[in-house]
Amino acid sequence: MVIEGVPAVWYRAFMNIAELIFEKSRGLSEELQQEALDFVDFLAARQSTAKDSRDWTRFSSEALSRQYASTDAVYDQD
Image (cartoon, rainbow, N blue to C red):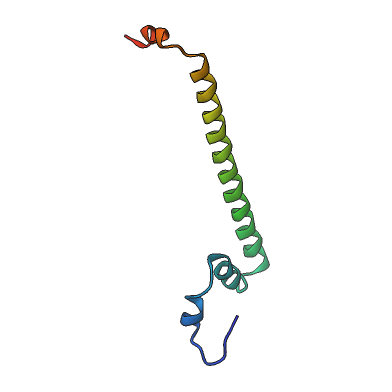
């Protein structure tokens, strides 16, 4: 997006991150654009995996807390 008479520095200050990535990637070769896309896919998968891990941790903790009684604390002592 170019606005006539407005320096690029100014209008880039009002763009969101996705728009900046799009603008910068336009100047790359198709091969580098594909590499950038693959990296975005990697980041999305990593974020999803982290969320899944947090969800399983929460589930495990809740399940354990339902079965753990205060009398079981004796087993936690060394």
